[in-house]
Length: 139
Image 1 (cartoon, rainbow, N blue to C red):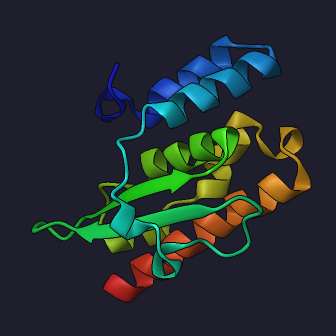
Image 2: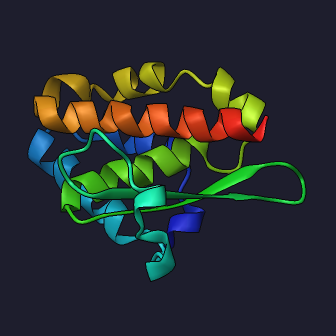
């Protein structure tokens, strides 16, 4: 299945089905592997997410309809899966919809906070914050 064919609901359903956290991590890694390749031009400091232990890049693109779409990548497998998760939560929404999205509630449904290292959890919330800053800049 291509990344474009995966929805946030698919991830929520899969997490509900898989009880084992090692399997959930493998699923996250697989999500990251399915991300479209990011152009090297996006791997610059301008698109780098601060606060992540791993390197993470998020590149916004505004559509003609006023929706933001994101390209993302990371140099770490699990973190790349978390980037994919962020794209599923936020990509394709208007800046106002992004700002109204409660990402923490979605992440609580996945129970990630209790199963990520403190550094990965900080990086995850740095991504959420960066996406919010990007959305505000397009309002």
